[in-house]
Length: 165
Image (cartoon, rainbow, N blue to C red; front, side):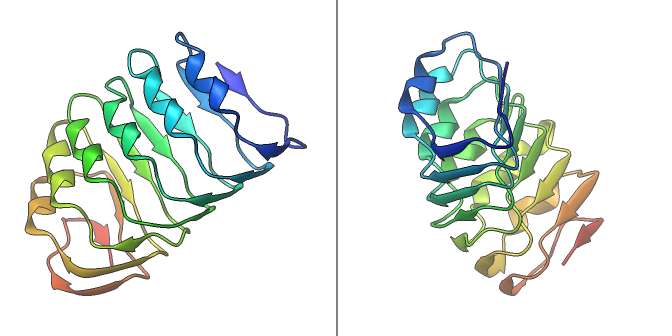
């Protein structure tokens, strides 16, 4: 488990990807800036919780997160992340319970592959981004406890039940 001091600043070191037994990475509410290192994808056999919210992170969500087979919680909200939601997150259907990507600058459409997460996904919050196109029908298979797609620019489609749009 790695928790960060709120006074932490600088960038995320790529060497964190070498901590093969790390299961909880929590760097929350700090002055950390820069990109999320793709090397975090090397933690595929151990990392279950990624909490990198309320920082000053920029750049895309690494596609390598799709190889984190033990990932249960992905919390990247309240940053300045850009790019699209990686389709590779749909590969995490065995364990992924919660996705928090709200309040970033993520663009593009919701990947249809997120519909593959129907077995375990309980929370999907991708509100307050710049997502567009239609809400994919594949999301209708999700039985979510909480869902928010609000404050995006969707052009149609049907949101899952109990979803704030």
